[in-house]
Image (cartoon, rainbow, N blue to C red; front, side, top):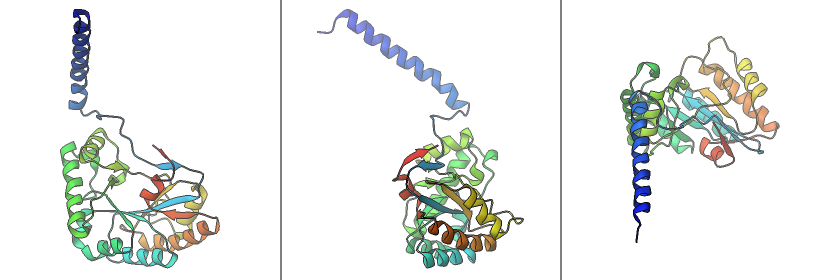
Length: 242
């Protein structure tokens, strides 16, 4: 039988729990993140593996050319696509899927997320999710916020929508019109190491240089013993670095 002393102790624990819950409510209401929810940048591993990722597509011209290059060298990749582009170019994203590459969510529009509310960010993620699902039959697992923005609103919206946030550890800034293929490739070669996630763009303004850099980079890293994997495969091979 439970003693009076034990009942009092239980009541105190319940009261303490309620006080903690009440204390947390203002933090959420004020836009603070609900938990320690951070993006994944890379993994710790002793294996020579890296993940190539492409943002802002599908593009009707350059995504197919990038797919042909990846097929030529037998390289898998992860494409973080915009829902608006998926709706415009459904055959291209179907090609990405058919080629065996991984597809991630990059939102519907390439918004400045700093200017959106938590609800607007959530709606944008879900709208893109539905476009991808409707076109490919795939329910995406990973989300990459445009510009890599990580505000409390973004973290809360992504957590509510059930995604893992994937950032990157190597960014050659291939979107810049000032950067040639050689500069882009050398930037990656200089900084890449085991377990990295490399950021490229198949949509944007400088894809011609990205395409040239990609060929050079694949050959160079292969000669150095690197293996290319998707983001999912990368995460299965080491400790996540946030």
